[in-house]
View 1 (cartoon, rainbow, N blue to C red):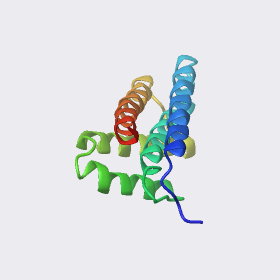
View 2: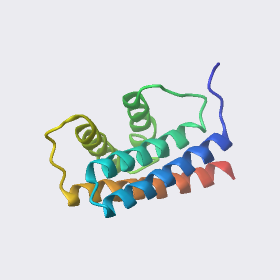
View 3: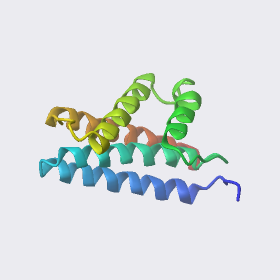
View 4: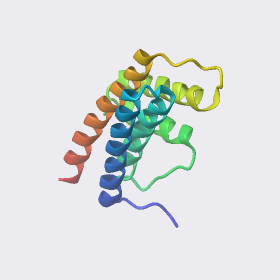
Length: 133
């Protein structure tokens, strides 16, 4: 089955991103920083996937989703260049949080990931509203 352009899927993924952001904030408040990093990253990931739902394209691997978004949205300045760098940092921190048993998480680093998720989510929400209208 080939991917289709779907406004409903974009909205659904945006809702997922908001849910992930909320979960990351709750986990952060509970001092569960590794888990909060994971949910903040998934908020970012689902935000990007919401944008891609408006194209007839999809990817299975996270790195492909991020690479495509950077190439066709960040590099073309549909989204600010600085957000591409922040996404790369969030991806690395999520991987370290999930897979590196010796990774020590600092609360301020987790807060940065949550802030990145909020920033991207706001940008994506505006982008999708503009595209859907």
